[in-house]
Image (cartoon, rainbow, N blue to C red; front, side, top):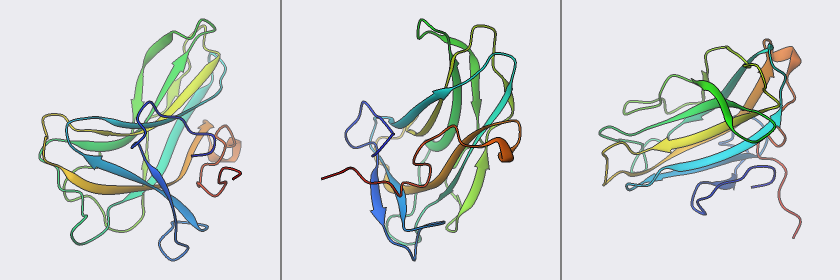
Amino acid sequence: ITNWSSTDPTGGVVVADAGAAQDGVNYMRMNAFGAASRILQQRWPAQAGKVYRSDAYMMSPAGANYFMPSNGYCSVMMQFYNSAGSKVGGNAESPLFRVSGPTSWTKFTSAPMVAPAGTVTGRTLVLYVPSTDRMTNQYVFFDNVRSYESEPTMSGALKNPDFETLPVA
């Protein structure tokens, strides 16, 4: 997916469906299945001492592909890194999308987090964590992922937040 990376080729796929997207035409479908975590991530410039948040719209389709984990979950998470590429500080994570999650687009927002001393980049992740689930095999959709300095009016850190930019063929 343009501007997003993953160590897992099944981390997510862009789906073009203007009728189903939260906004625009495309959204990302996270393939939440089995015992492996699924992660899509993007790094962005950040500055120590500034307050940041991340958010994303998430939902699961009603019906056979509705997300029904026993212990697993999906979320949006934010982290910070220094110039050596080492993680500094903890994680800021949204409320967890678990069983009984919404079937309509709902915003999930991380707690605000001050970028620790030494921060030069932030990292936003959209992820599925299976915990002890081994048989989960459903979808969670993500759209309009953002990371921003204290207020949404300062947004713009992420590129392709709505998954509308596709790779050049």
